[in-house]
Every structure is written in structure tokens, then in C-alpha cells.
Amino acid sequence: MNRDLFLAILSMDSYNRGYGQGLLGLSASGRLGKAEITSDSLILGGTPDDRADTAAGFYAIAYDMTGVAGFGAGERVISYRG
Image (cartoon, rainbow, N blue to C red; front, top):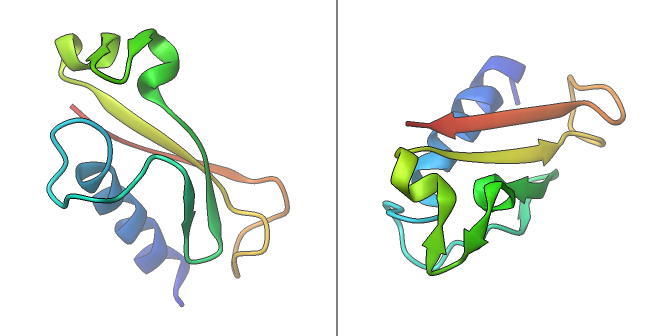
């Protein structure tokens, strides 16, 4: 897959995970293709039911791109909304 296309897919993914997601049932862990989800903005504080990022209208998710064509080992991508 083209690197730019995969980056576009990851940017859309941030709208479909976390609080206020567009699609139900996607967790903030696991993989999207070979990109491994490493963390999301819940690390800013709070609990899954009362997140610090919700009040700010912000959500971010980080991916480890190791093993994804066009990316280097250990390269990270952060996708966000808000």
C-alpha cells in the first residue's frame, strides 16, 4: 500500500476510536493492518469513563509502524482529532 494512503487511513482511524467514536466496537489497542496501536490520549489522565482528553475535545492514538512497508523499524505515527 502507498505510504500516503496508509497515513490517510490512520488519520481517519482517530475518529473511530476512543470516546465519541464514529464506529462502535473498535478498541484503543490491537492493530490496524501491521501498525500496532501503542497508546492513546487516555494517558493524559482520568478513567475510561471520565477522560481528561474529553473535556479538551482532543483524542490521539499512537501506532508503532515496525513491519509496515514504507516505514522504518521503530517509527511511530500519531493520529489525532480535536
